[in-house]
Picture 1: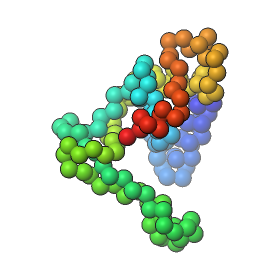
Picture 2: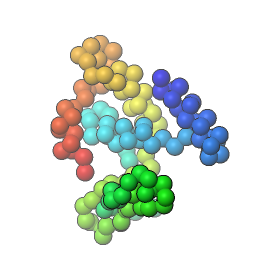
Picture 3: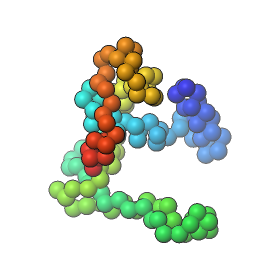
Picture 4: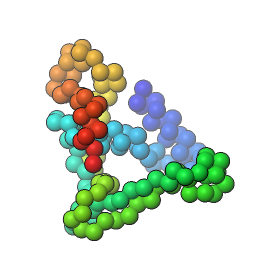
Length: 141
């Protein structure tokens, strides 16, 4: 199913936006960020600019207004990102990642982890169990 989804989005991005090198991988990257905190599924994310110091951001999503307002040009739904001073805590926005490791983790997790089930251990004994969703809420920065 993953191949079919990526093929569909690749064709759509090529047809609609002229992006022919493949689609942006927003959703798989979001999954990778969640998996990154799980032992055995670590993916090195590069959260720095020019290989120097780490960056953290303040992130706000404009929620005032309606969908209709947004279609008419309002800021509704816009994400506003502000770089914080060095050393201040905030949201990590990766600028890159270990692509080879990313695909290894996605391939290891995706086929059997779509639905969490005890039988997972038969099909993927090398991968740790998924964490409780409540504990994930506490782990996200």
